Image (tube, rainbow, N blue to C red; front, side, top):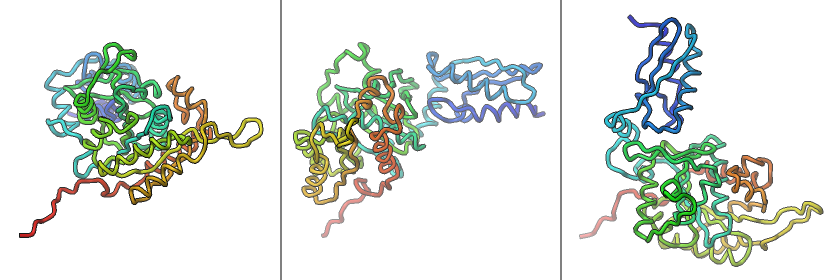
Length: 379
């Protein structure tokens, strides 16, 4: 005979999501057992790995959900660890295949992919990318962020996402910060932040491929890649692995930055990628004393880049945003608290939020996508 209170407990457990996978524990077959004796509910939960960093979160969520069931006076949660076979079944359930492949290139995938690039370092590309990702997540979008700057990775500090990922049968469960799933080279270096990455071209390509194929990203609305400056190996590998990715070119207003930013954008001509637009960072801001615009890094660089790329590529490349200079953007990066979170009403935050709305709601279309057809030959 069905036990009504167990049915209520099952319904409560169906509302408890795994904090990393964001699916109910019941759907993931993570509930080992449940029983009620004299009002005490005992629930056993399978963890994916013994060192699961979310064990306390899972325990508290189960306790809260089951504790709200009428007739339950106390909840006891016991944790066990999945067997290798169970982990394989979980992986198969999540990815739907055994071979490692990049889901973003599969037919029917609707994730919008943006590769954020620049011609040179020091233009605030990573800060723009991190804040853009967080602003998109705040709009309710499912967002992933790949720190593709293998040598100079900075995204973990910018977002405070320094926890190591969880490994499940070769599948990498990425850490999250501010609703953004993040993967970087940092957790794969035993020596930590100070350890250099001595990779040559093929190894860079393989690292990027693993970030895209071995990480469980879930069903993303947007995937952002923070590329290293310039037009080197990673930029070319990105075009090969994600041919439909659109480029967002970041520059500052000064001429020196805009000239090299144009070269970064012109790579699209060789890789057959589309440029979503140009972002001018560190633009003018009002003087705190007189209100007059202050142009610390010159003016017009973003417009020059957008107009030059439009002319050279024969297609419209818009100037998407001019982000005002704000020292808090740097300060937030040092503390792991993005400006769009720490000071959401700041002029720079407002511009970044508008940019997130623009890029996050664009229809992807068929530009840059392989249709799997070839021209017919005349005989």
